[in-house]
Length: 118
Image (cartoon, rainbow, N blue to C red):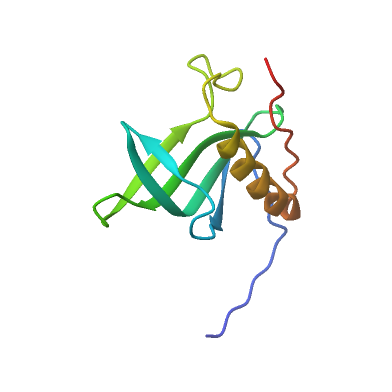
């Protein structure tokens, strides 16, 4: 494919979303919903930057294998209902997935700090 380009690309920091995907090692994380175990094999963390505010992790979408062996998608919302901070009930293991994604996102200029204990 022949391609040429000109210009200086710039990101508009009005409402920018960045998705960072991670392949998870089998057996390293178990998600439990309604008493059923799900084994995630992929996580996609969505970071959002609104106006000049710091980047925030908005959600994690997991691709997982369910107890019946079928693939399912599970989404974890990370921001509280007023969108001004983290949800209180997000398990620590999910924040670790976010931190791993943030490490990868640092390569594209995202700086992120995981929420502290409340």
